[in-house]
Image (cartoon, rainbow, N blue to C red):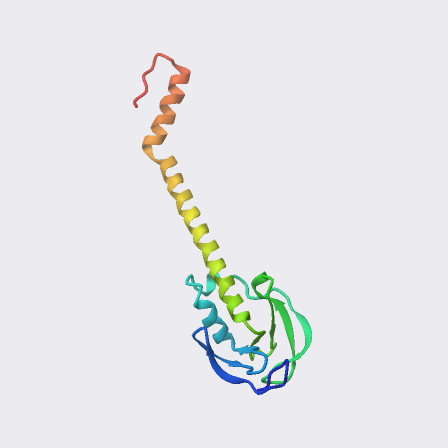
Length: 156
């Protein structure tokens, strides 16, 4: 396969623990869907379902797929400020030099955001359990009775 940018033969290379095809001239990278997923998994531990949509729209480009030679489309990677190219026939994704590092950075950010969301949801659920607990409801009941009848004694 040849580089879609500089027409140099792509070479197999391991980057960030993932085998992929890399251009020795411009450092562009060709990754299959599985390789892109492996790269993301290096920084994101919550599973594929929590990663969000990979792409929501695309636009045609003049760059050709290194595998089949058809024109590729571009998209905003998971709606971040990172443009990627992909083959519509699902042969793979093209990343420019060092964009693999950007994918890892974005996945770390996504994981941190998700971890904060999970923590906030857990805290809110614990708060709801407390509000529904008998002791809290008893206190509310006693305060309501005391407001109606000042002679009554609260239980707490």
